[in-house]
Amino acid sequence: MLENGSHFFEGVEKLLEIWFEESSNGDDDLRNISRSDWENVLSNVNCQIISTSKNDIIDAFVLSESSMFVSKRRWILKTCGTTTPLKCLGQLLKLAEANGYNVVADLFYSRKNFTRPEAQITPHQGFTEEVTYLDSIFPNGRSYCLGSMNLECWYLYTFSRSDIKISTQLISDEKNVDSDPDQTIEILMQDLDPETMSIFYKNKFNDANGATVKSGIDTILPTMHIDDFLFDPCGYSMNGINDKGEYMTIHITPENQFSYVSFETNVALSNYRKLINQVINTFKPGKFIVTIFANKCSLAYETMKELEVEYSQGSHWKRTDMQCCNFPSYNLLFAQYSHSEKTGDNL
Image: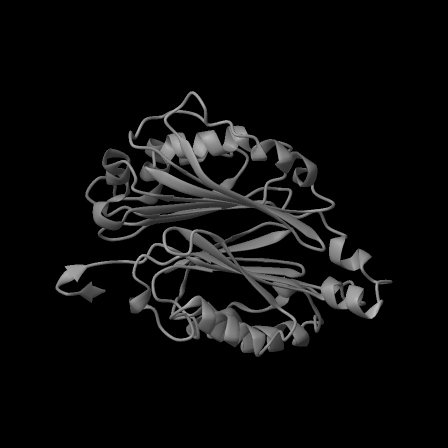
C-alpha cells in the first residue's frame, strides 16, 4: 500500500474468536467445513489461505494476512493490513449452523489501536463503527477500551451467552460455557530491534525455516509443530500446534519505520513470566502490550494475579499501564511496558 508516496503496512491485527455451545450430536465438528467453504468465507475478509497444518484436535491455516485456527467448536481468525474480518461473520454463522452449531457461547473481538486508522476499510474505520456492526448481530454485546485512548490502547468487544442466562435466570446450562479450560496470552510489540528484524527479509533467507531457526522462534515453545512462511520482499508468519490441540502464532512486519510483531498462544501455564521474557528477548521491542484471558477452569485464572505485581523494578522496562477486568466467565489482564534502551532485560 502506498500513502503519500511512501510504503506502509498495518501490522496491527484484528482478532476474532468464537466459541459455540456444545452440539447434541457428538459428530458435529467445525473441522468438517471444507477448504473451499473457508476460502469463500475468507474472500469477504480479503485474504487467502497459503498453507495448512493439522492434527487430531486442531486445524491451522497460514493466511496471506496472518492466521486462522479451527477446532471442534472454536474458530479463531487473526488478520492484519486492511482486511475486513467482521464482514465474514454472517457466512461463518451459517456454515456453523449447517455443521450443527447454532448457538454462540462466547465471542471476543479485539485489536490494538491502528498506526494509520484512516487507511482501514468499513466496517473497521473506527472502533465505534466496529461495535455498531457487531451489535447488529449480537445485541447483548459489550465494548471496552483499555489503556490510554489518546496514546496506546487496546479495544475489546465481548458477547457471552452466560450474561443472558444470568439476567434471565436461565443458568442451568452454564456449565457448557465453562466446560473447557481456556486461556490466551497476546504480546504485541513495536519499535523492534532492526538487526533482529533484518532476519525476516528474503534477501537474508530464502525460506522461512532459516528465519525461524536463526531468530530462535523454534525454541519459544519447543513442542509446537511449526508451519512458517517468509514473504517477499519481507514479512513472516508462523503457526504452531501441539498434540494437546494448543496453538501459537507469530506475525512480523519488519520494516523499521513501522515494525510490529505479535505473539499469541493458548498454552496452559500457571505462570507466564518466563514465556513473556523469552518472547521479548527474542524480538527486542522498544515497547509492548501483554493481554491475558483466562476462564475459571484455566490454570492461569488464579495465577494471573502474580502478573499484577510490579516486577519491572531493577530493569529498563517501565510499566506504563495495567488494568484488570472480571467478566462472567473470564478474567482479563492488560499491561503495557516501554523502555528507552533496547536491551535484553527480563521483566
